[in-house]
Image (cartoon, rainbow, N blue to C red):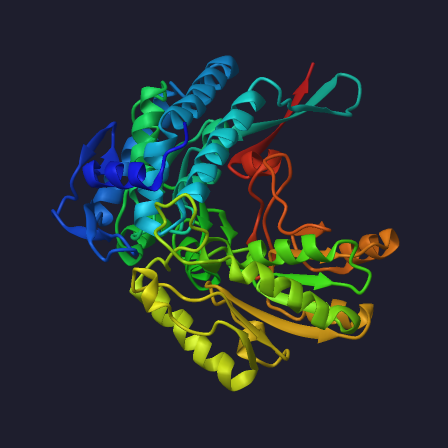
Length: 494
């Protein structure tokens, strides 16, 4: 039976959250005893004291992970055993989905229905990579007589992972599932704002049979725990999801330490291109609203640039307006809520600054301000600006909030030029009834994923990641696992 708003509030009132780090299979404080507060963005009240790990704690976690890798209980386990444990982890996530969703909703302001979906998606990732264990093959290369050349994938060793606050459980699983499937040990650094579900996930992994020490979680400030992990000389690779600016820092950390490969999934300013021959105006408008206002716009691949062909511009905005009226802000613990608060005061202030910029640059079509009457102090109305030009900051900069910049174009060539006029290239979407145009657009749009007659499609079966300053490497699919592995070629003369 589905839980009601009152059910979720009762669970939240009795929740006891443990914010201590997870190292060597147990909860522990930071070596210096420092903590930081996890704050509920809906109420402004603290949820838990989170361990603020520093370099010495990261050293301990990395050493633990290295020892576990050398011992080999996981790295050298039979594929069938790793498969069993990975599937068991998926089962643990599903069994504790409501608890994990509640933690994410309380910490990040995510609507509880979205947080429940995130929990299932996390479980699916462990399912998918678990099933891959005994189905991924190495290769035999063509070679001369008397010689056999083989190409194998081997785990790198210790993988560091740094994830953001917007999809706490899901982003952690995006890194953990493939890196574990590859046979590595891990040290995960969750975001300051949302560490609790990652810490709980580590406990569930061990309960499912993951050997002690293979997974360690070091919460804390980015400039302390995150930088220490990025610079650590005994970390063999690092996966990062977050802003482009911080992603660049991790490239520096790696370059100044041991040249570890750094895989980045960074910012975006994704375009949604609507052509005059859009086959379903209502469906496209619904998708446009979901594509930018889900989780109050705090999504890396949010389609925050809406490009409308001249002939459909006014009709599309009218259809979009109807969907905006349904985005009523409310308590994220209410299953009916579709618009929650921003994650923090800092993020709220940042978005409000862009609202002021937008009023100077373009025409306010809808929203445009904070919503003090919503029951919390960090709500921003779904906002649409029209007449946005390529030189405007609204067009060029990632806002990470519920703000949509609308531009218009005359023909396909202009639409392509506008869509590609960005330093980002994470995702792009378009609507057209012309199959030839759909293929042409997929060829020329500069984005890691292009969705036709939909918005922001993603699946474990297909790679996800960006071009340009949206990142390096891909998550999901085989690519998501192989980036945490080393290719080895063997030449055997017989």
